[in-house]
Length: 291
View 1 (cartoon, one colour):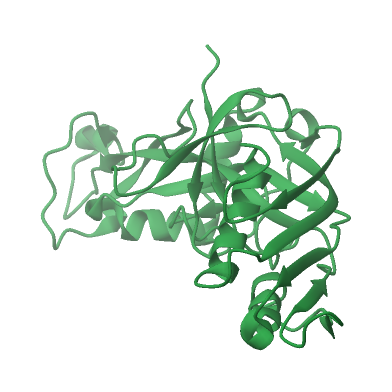
View 2: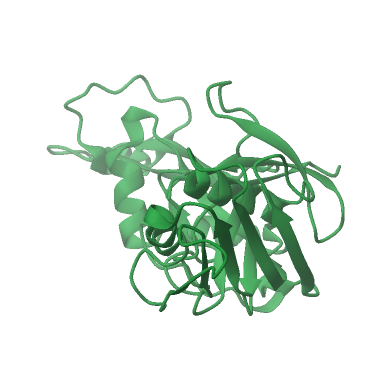
């Protein structure tokens, strides 16, 4: 069965590929993919990341609409809306061509990867610590990357804040020089240009990681040899544990990733938008992440 894809989108150019947001890493907040529990295990053999052919993209966005309903178009639309908020309707943002690339891996090719990831010390410690709280963790299974990003240009009638807002959106860490020049036809009009320095991640897919726990019996006191056959065995249906019970009395029994992307089950307050995946023109859903 083919499941509909869901992408969380990042309206920023800060996060570079193979840095803080990588395939296979586990996170606790679906909207903050850079906050990982540990570096991901290597994706090798059948799990080696797959890369779609790069697609050239460009669009001109104004306050009246957007050029497409693709995933990257949604990202551009959010950036445009935030930078242009409250400014003249004559302002326009133009994104020159960028190469869009999709990277993903097929977890079904080796389902032990989820179990091995859950046993990474930092991940295992977090899972055991939060076992009773019912908190969830998520694995990044797909990335959308803008490679060879093109120039971003803003044309507007109010030069007082436009340059600063552009720099804050495209380059909040002061990695790119932003130039400005006055329009000779009007002292108040200006054009600001900036180009992201490197490729960046603009969207990602998640799967929820599910863990089942079993309770172990410990040998206490003097136990006769005839009773040792039960030592260390898991109880198939353990009774509800008390809050002060030692977590060491539990161990993982099973680890698996959901078959579907995480996101559609989020409540209505989490705004979800229909989109088209530029990679294969399939319908998908986009949800805004934090940035």
